[in-house]
Picture 1 (cartoon, rainbow, N blue to C red):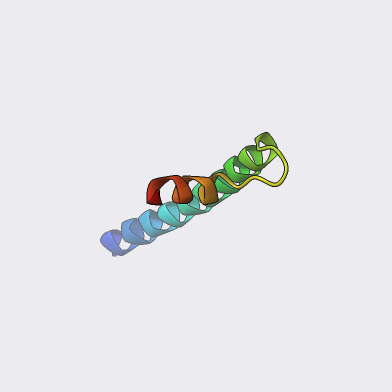
Picture 2 (tube, rainbow, N blue to C red):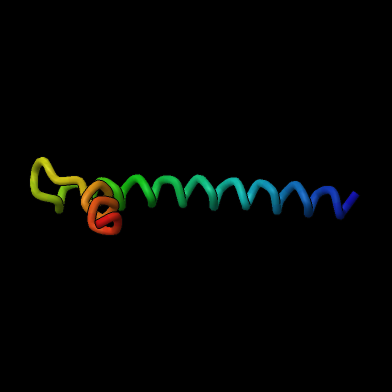
Length: 52
């Protein structure tokens, strides 16, 4: 029983951390998007440069 409770708490904690990571990623993407000049996508540019 104690192991079940600990496992449930651990799984809940992992889910909370994953949710926080998703929120953080969303914020980072927003900051990066705001920092980019209009009309430029850094991912597209990086791909085109690496193919050349």
